Image 1 (cartoon, rainbow, N blue to C red):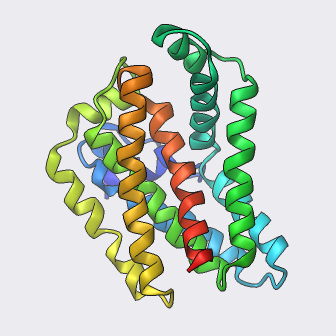
Image 2 (image 1 turned 90 degrees about the vertical axis):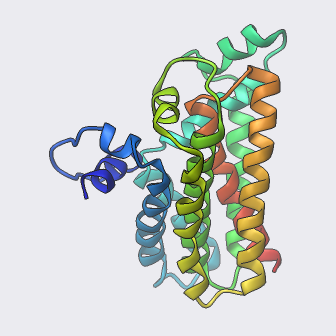
Length: 236
């Protein structure tokens, strides 16, 4: 329970009492999907009574961002700056890790948010879709934490130091309860497959551009996977 509490204190902005030693979660980063169930579940409850698809989509996205403290969204913005920077690897890393927000960050934030918002407006069930998307997003974070060799010291390198290759399995198993929901099985299979594909692509991209993974890359994967899963469910 201390591991779960440390996870939720790290991934959410909820008032959960006295801080628990972060190492409890670091040793069990395969628990990431549990945060997805909580964040997505609260967002689902908030939106289940909203009849307007447009309003429901906006509220759902706002809920997951607020509940996560926008920490992962910040990673998406930083990644956008790093990818759009001109120059070599060091310049791209500097652009990603500095405190300023450039046009690359703005573009990345707008594109990913618009994709998620447009997809949510046309799905048959917004609450269940945001829940499934959030669980998949956190699963991608767990997999990247396990597989992504860090290029600098930080939170990601600390978590990666405790991660074991077998963490991939329990993280995946924690997504299986999604199949109990009344969503198309094919859509859920596509969602999990896209989660794995995006994780692999983020690994390849970050290794080539930055020489490894950091917390910004992991956080960005959360936002990107959520948007892609929403779109796939919408199309299915």
